[in-house]
Picture 1 (cartoon, helix red, strand yellow):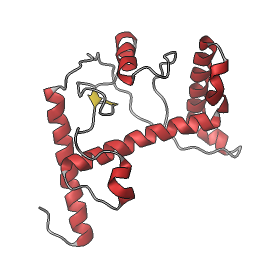
Picture 2 (cartoon, helix red, strand yellow):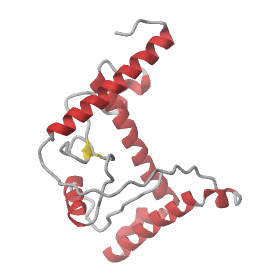
Picture 3 (cartoon, one colour):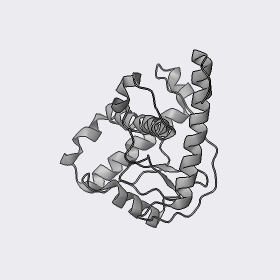
Length: 191
C-alpha cells in the first residue's frame, strides 16, 4: 500500500474527524468515486464511507473467522474492518522500517513533521521501485490505481441520505455475492 496524502503536525490526541476537517479545508481531495474509509466516529457523507453503527464490526467480534456474518450489514462491516486493518498494518510497517518514528518526542515539532513526511515518501519510493530493491534483497508488492480527477468535498456532521443508499447498495451486492459463494461451497440454496 502506498500513501497518497499525509497531514503531519497535529497532536496525537486530536480527534481524527477534526484533523480530516482541517485537511479537507486546505488541500485534501478525494477522487470522484473513491471514499475515505472512516470508523464509526465519523459521519457518513459524500466522501466518507463508515460502518453500520450498532452492528458487529471489529474482526475479533467475528471470532477470528469462526463466526460468519449473518446479515448484509455484518458482512459490509467485516469487509470495512478488514480494509481498515490493512491501513493500520501499513502504518505499523512504516514504523517498523523507520524506528525513529517511535522516538520522535525528543525532536522539535517541525523536525517531527519532516521525519514523518520523509519516512512516508521513502516508503512510497521503495514501493514504486520494488523491482530495483528486489534485486538487492528487499521485496515489496505494488498496486497501481488509476488516477481520477479531484473533487471538492464538504465535511458534514450528519449522515448523508445519498451515502446511506450507496452503502446499502454496496452491502446488498456484497451479501448477494456472498450467498452465491456460500451456496456453491456447501451446495445450499440461495435465500
